[in-house]
Image 1 (cartoon, rainbow, N blue to C red):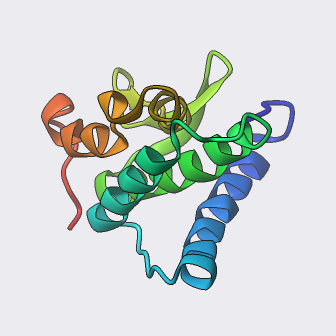
Image 2 (cartoon, rainbow, N blue to C red):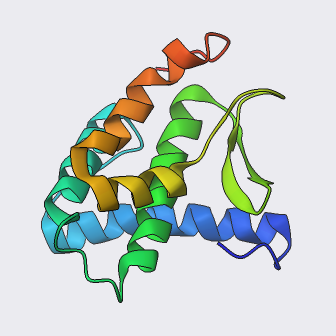
Length: 135
């Protein structure tokens, strides 16, 4: 994601991308998603099925869309806020704790289940004890 835009515009675009994932999943794949762990499980499987065959021409678009969705799932369940850190967008929980959903989606597209997005999601309350699950 470019950092040349105003931060609030970028966050709005991220949220719009996350909502678009829900719409596409419903309309094109017949899958009802919410911003919850079940949706992250679905996302993990979806990426796993794509990782070896992901068309390089659409890879960055996939990372932007799916990373936005993963990030919104994290925020809605564990809190935090979108921030840009050294040119990369991620979710900061406090001054010392952050995760980077776009990077994680990119790694899973590259490496498969060894870099599972579900693994990141389920480890958040363990890695960051000050974060609590809102569900």
